[in-house]
Image (cartoon, rainbow, N blue to C red; front, side, top):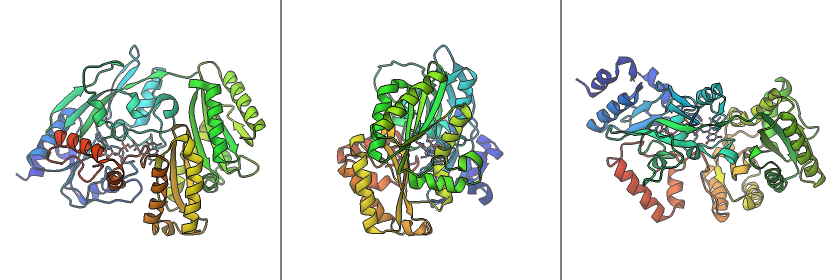
Length: 471
Ligand SMILES: Cc1cc2nc3c(=O)[nH]c(=O)nc-3n(C[C@H](O)[C@H](O)[C@H](O)COP(=O)(O)OP(=O)(O)OC[C@H]3O[C@@H](n4cnc5c(N)ncnc54)[C@H](O)[C@@H]3O)c2cc1C
């Protein structure tokens, strides 16, 4: 019997795909930047079937590429071009195993889309705060494997801070059930932390126990026009001081980014209208989540905006008056990645910096890019409250996006040299995948790389878990 037929016997015929047409959707990443090839795609339905699959892979020396929603932005879930790897898709493992309202936790399988976890929490009047524009497609397994961030990190932390327990299948098929719902557990190494952010290079996450929170009574979203980035940072400090933990998000959007979304949405009703009478260099989007009521949140937000305008750090502001208003403002922010993709894409950087360096970084880098080529145009947005910018470099209106891609290496040199100068990180939330693997090896210290290699060697001695990614 051929090895692949043996896998079919273990999982069932419909759980192993190997025709070119069936494989195709699993072989290219969300950005369409990487296309690989694979021996087959396995679609296990349970942790036991993942264990059977990994034992089969160990027996036949087959590399394994875990794939959840395939929304990653660094090519981490795309196999290489050798055609030797098995793509293990968690799509069929999407059960919510339990919601424990007494303990404020939810346990979900790895392939459960993030949005379904949020909805299951909401059905029990709880909040699961992880929130990304890709939440309809990305999965809990992918979120943990990339330590996803998103828009609520400022208040609730990233995926790492939301995880209490985890179930993992190791490279040899061993199942580790670490699905604990404890907020305190000082009994040695915290093993789940190894798998968070490991991008499928150490094992397959099959389920996780996650923290839930009380639902806020009201949410007010406020879009504030700022004269420059330094003013937006000053606004962040004021908002933090005024709102404390009620400030659940603070995003920024550069005018170039904003105009792109607006132009693409023209004719789409309120979303496409010019919200402000004139363009402003930067917009800040704040979310105020209240334990009291909407009127209180709106009153607090209005006071913040009035004081900020008086101080000259804000020029104009729009406040949501209903949940629909709030959703509509968020949807403008969340449509930025897709708007950029539709415009032909750009050279992406997902960087973090100390807040004090942010304005200088943007000014210096913008000037250096202009000196390189006046056709280039930074399209910047991001989670300012977390010191995280998506510093994407596209082209001026009317110039094909290819002009930016043809200068990718020079653009990256400029951006990453500035990141290093200002003590930042080359990947704030998207991970390393294949896009930033080599760059990480150049920028991390020898000691750090040696410890990472030792961990990899201990858990995946044959180097079969997602080869060519991260490390
Ligand atoms: C429009 C858009 C907006 C986005 N916004 C954000 C954002 O705000 N913040 C953010 O952090 N990211 C964002 N992303 C990136 C992406 O959605 C996240 O990285 C997400 O966590 C990936 O989940 P996924 O299920 O799609 O994983 P995939 O893309 O399938 O996989 C990502 C990595 O995780 C590994 N992996 C997947 N499942 C498992 C598993 N069960 N066990 C072990 N390894 C696994 C894969 O091998 C791969 O290395 C965005 C993407 C898009 C397209």
